[in-house]
Amino acid sequence: GAVVSQHPSWVICKSGTSVKIECRSLDFQATTMFWYRQFPKQSLMLMATSNEGSKATYEQGVEKDKFLINHASLTLSTLTVTSAHPEDRSFYICSATGEREAYEQYFGPGTRLTVT
Amino acid sequence: GQNIDQPTEMTATEGAIVQINCTYQTSGFNGLFWYQQHAGEAPTFLSYNVLDGLEEKGRFSSFLSRSKGYSYLLLKELQMKDSASYLCAVMDSNYQLIWGAGTKLIIKP
Image 1 (cartoon, rainbow over the protein chains, first blue to last red):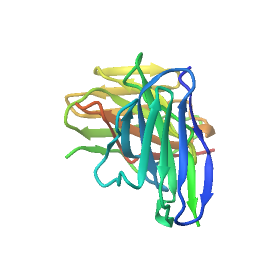
Image 2: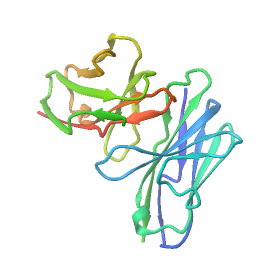
Image 3: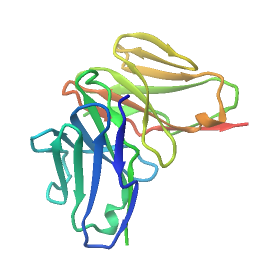
Image 4: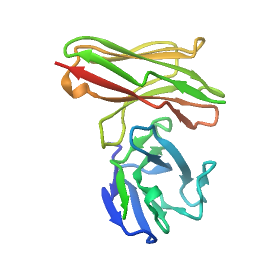
């Protein structure tokens, strides 16, 4: 149980275009979803936390107009990287917590974004 | 500020035992997590400690001392597939995870 999927697993986009990444909890209802970014050889950096039906809470230094997060249902959250630039190249990972074991975050497989 | 410290890299031999240490200073404490992350993949959950003491789960054990702000992950009977980064994370008083930079474990035959 507790499976989280992400789509796409990797994406290449042109500079200036937008990319949408989906995060789904497949067999549980995710009360909270988290979006992380990880640069090579660095640890996870929390970008934002979202609860279903409410606006995401962004970490300091993360531009909310650039990284749009929508947590439309208890099983789906999306991250849209708007006007992507080469410096946005990173590994984006989502995680989710459910009601039963709220302390444990279940991670999606990640999405590798390359901007040309 | 909040801080999680763990060694950057460790090397061990196949079949041996290795201990990865983690020290932390956080505002509040609601548990400490260890995750394994293979290169290019997302982290996978290994253990959760909220009370002092040792939690054993197969070849992996995790220890916590809240008074010392200290934890370690012990890996026994090392296998080549254990080569990965091991991330220590602490849940603070706001139930937010504070992540360490990770320890890259290299296993040699």
